[in-house]
Amino acid sequence: MNALPDLVCPAGSLPALKAAVDNGADAVYLGFKNDTNARNFAGLNFDPKTMAEGIRYAHGKGCEVLLAINTFPQAGRVADWQRAVDGAADLGVDAIILADIGLLDYASRRHPNQRLHLSVQGSATSYEAINFAHREFGVRRAVLPRVLTLAQVEHVIKNTPVEIEVFGFGSLCVMNEGRCWLSSYACGESPNTVGACSPAKYVKWDKQPGAMETRLNGILIDRFGDAEPAGYPTLCKGRFEVQGEMYYALEEPTSLNVLAILPEIVKIGVRAIKVEGRQRSPAYVTQVTRTLRAALSALANDKERYHVKPNWQAELAKVSEGNQATLGAYNRPWR
Amino acid sequence: MSQGFTIPRFQLPGFIAHIGARLPQWPHALVLVTGLNAALKMKLLPEDSLSALDGKLFRIRVNDTGGEASFTYYGGLFRPVFRSDRTPDLAFAANLSAYLQLLARQEDPDTLFFNRELSIEGDTELGLVVKNMLDAIDWPKVPALLPFQRP
Ligand code: SF4
Image 1 (cartoon, rainbow over the protein chains, first blue to last red):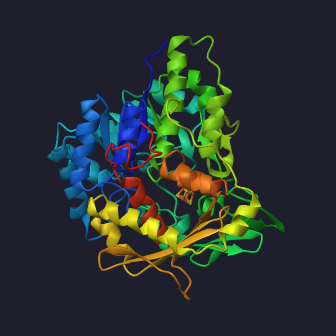
Image 2: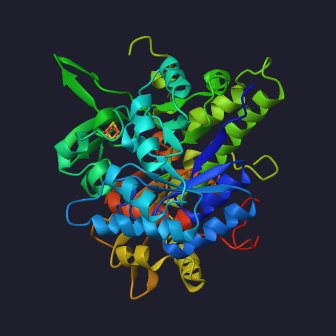
Image 3: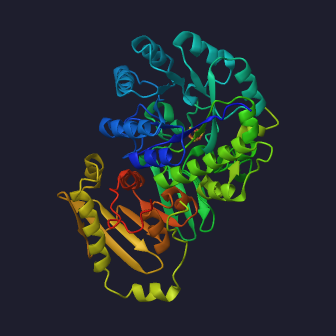
């Protein structure tokens, strides 16, 4: 069997970081408190002081720290993103996760010894794109967008020297990551530009008798009955009327969960499995990290007898958006 | 965590809410505000988040006890609000068990929200500030401080 992939877990705060480290993460990923990262939410993320403390805690327990600078520098403010790269290198993180080609170029010249990862927001879905980033900027790992089938992931791995990281659990972002402008349509802001899909200031939860309505900058996205599970207020997971029918036209509120295909993921040589959710609380990080660690350990112990335990599924289903999980594109028959 | 004390999901019988709603509401607000101010004094709450709370009105409703507490933050302190005619900027409603699970960091607010066990109304951005502020508190490991905190 291939070496077990690293378990890469999200940390939006110091307690979440500690929860990931203590529950079996091999690496945590985090971001600065500004729009250089794609989870730029009020009160979330790390200032330099807490980040230094987090890095100390993780390294003290043998856990790696990856820093995401995964938005795109905006016109006239390129220096802000470059400063973030310099800051990350100074802090001594194990790798910087970058999406923008200009920043990759800057980081590889300015900090030639710094390990660089290609973010999912870089939207590299082919080995040619990944090998380009490797050749030009020395990228050592790439995170694949959640749009490839398992066979396609395997094809990429076979044709690149770059380590491949895939998503293992979390809320789904269905578009080719790094290319979605849906929320710009509603409010002029998107993950790439301001570091948030559906920025909170445009979101309105409206309690109505028997239902709750979600609006993004006034546009009605969904209406949940009192007993219906809710989801994030993103346009892609809204219910819309299409040709006279009202349904989740793009994607249902759901979370990706790869437990069922974990043996295949390891077999094809995936180097790391990523958990989505820097916006979530320490409780979520604890539950998901612990569950995926248990699954990985079970697989390492006896790959023949690996099966998905009901309590793992129950734990993950509970924290899932809309209380449901999917294998996403991994087992889609079409491409 | 298996070795910790787990708070089950429960709902108190309806008559409790009926009685609860008739009791004076100020003790809830006082207890809450005292706790928050203690966290303030210990410098557990980050400055940048606190400035976003200035002058805002918050309401916390416990559905199954009928209890309700309103408070505000200004001049560097949390203060109870006993009577208010204006709509709160941010209002939470949930059963007691959900609040206890949140306090103990046993459940994540997004989870409770997806499952419709926690309702949040009002200014969404303010809600995020409050949620992230509470999440970011790195509680010292003093058992007495948070009776439900698990190892
Ligand atoms: S709208 Fe949906 S697909 Fe687009 S960035 Fe947001 S979560 Fe992703």
